[in-house]
Structures are given as C-alpha cells and as structure tokens.
View 1 (tube, rainbow, N blue to C red):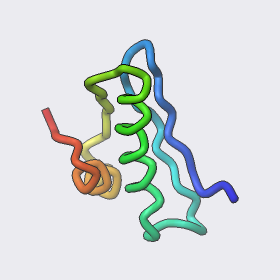
View 2: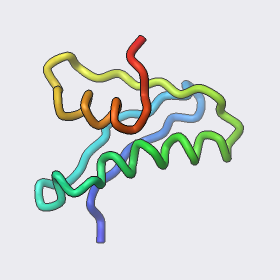
View 3: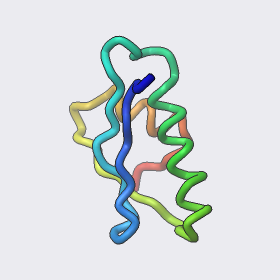
Amino acid sequence: MKCGWNWLDVNTKTTHNLFVSKLHTNKGYGLQLKKYMLVLSKQLGIDKLKCEVDDWNKNSIRVQQKAGWVKI
C-alpha cells in the first residue's frame, strides 16, 4: 500500500516533496516518513539534512517539528 512519499536528494542533502495521500492523512505517516529520512541519511553517511517548507504550509511545518527538525 502506498500512502505517500518523501524524496531525498543525496547530492544536496535535502528532502523534498513530502506527500501523504488524503486517504491516509492524520495517521502519522508523514511523521514516519520524516523520521525515516533521518535514519536513511545516517545510513548513507549524511550527517545533516535540510528541507524547505513554505510558511503557509502549517501542516508540513508541524510534521517537521514533531519529527525533530529545527527551523534555521
């Protein structure tokens, strides 16, 4: 079952396009995807990741913060 995705660009050490299907929102899948990005990056030898989120995207900001990401 595909619930969503989050793209990891290993060259720029950036995550992009966090998406969770409307059928699966508010079930924690976005949070799991963001946490997995941190695990995957460590396995790939990446010590820092970044992502960009538009200020209007409050849901995405909330998910990032719950996953332990910090705004800089």
